[in-house]
Image (cartoon, rainbow, N blue to C red; front, side, top):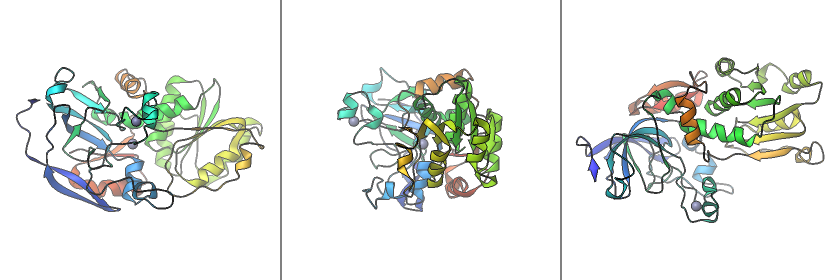
Length: 361
Ligand SMILES: [Zn+2]
Ligand SMILES: [Zn+2]
């Protein structure tokens, strides 16, 4: 095993006990097995999914049709980036101490039906960093990357406030891939959180489309304008359908990207979209959505494209950040150290000006 000399025996970490019960504790620094590496975390973003887990969402804690996914005692965080400080014996040919890396949020099993077909992001056990005790995440000073982790090198030239966005930007890129955009499409982007703004950045960098960005928060709409939204619209200020109709002679938008996780946004999208339009869904909902499903078939013949995670998108994202191809300045709004985790979750949950809140151990 190759290792740095100054690794302490204990570290601080935010341990998950239950909904709204996360505690900053001193725990042992894990020791890598021969096929593992130890990462010193530079920063880890708080994702909407982390927030929904913190709030006690059913998809995480069980209830309704869901069984419990998250394990008490785990350390959260899958949007991490850091430096390798220790490399297990069997990994020494592949990675070096000191390299800056990121691992994809999902750790595929490699043997299920989906993994065998190359659809690793849909892996049946679906193990994601930060939700299981054997797969602790980046809300800690150190974390382990196992042999099944998909690890990518991150150039030192990418500043931390951009490197920490690689995971959400990779997810945003997959959403845009799944939107099958055509030249001159009018796209309604509903939700300008970090994921939505990332989607906007990709659209503006790679496609000749017009985008209407939607959010209830003015600060996010201001950020969307900076990134290049052609129009911004606050649903508090009026009916989106009227606005879209006024731009399209009553036809509707070509694509509606749902990135809010709010049921009303789904209903709104189905009403604004044109016949044979595309509805792209990338959200986690805490509540059920109820809407008139017939509009998808008999009404408008809509294509629904679901989006999950970020397959084959990390390298593309790292290259784009390295070349400065996508505009992401201003998406990270707050950085706090681990001791400020309560305030960090609070900011992410309810501060009108917060977009991406990150923890820097
Ligand atoms: Zn995330
Ligand atoms: Zn699998």
